[in-house]
Amino acid sequence: MMNYRKLSVLIVDDNRFYIDRMTAMLTDLEGIGQINTAKNYKEAYSQIGAAEHDLVLLDIHLPDGNGLNLLKQIKESPVRTEVIMVSNSSDDFYRRQSKELGAYYFLDKSNDFEMMPAILSEMNSC
Image (tube, rainbow, N blue to C red):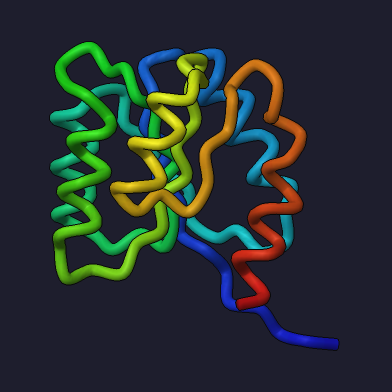
């Protein structure tokens, strides 16, 4: 049996229902360790600066900022953190912008939720 390192995850979203749903799903996955949450840009920025996360699940529209700007800052920092953009704004513009800025993946919050375990398993085996 292979030993996988457990991923530290930060969920950044202002929708409490989504955060609770994602946290519950992640808690059930074998390869997930610590799970932190942030409800806005300012909290997320502070948490990213204070601790290293292997993965950030990042919404585009936050009450006090834009997730794409935060993605750019994460990718320009020296810390190796993967980002999966998770948004209801899933048109081609946001998908393209996210990819260009270095997102590992882009998921439509409403339609792609069930893909998360497979994506995380893939990430954890790399």
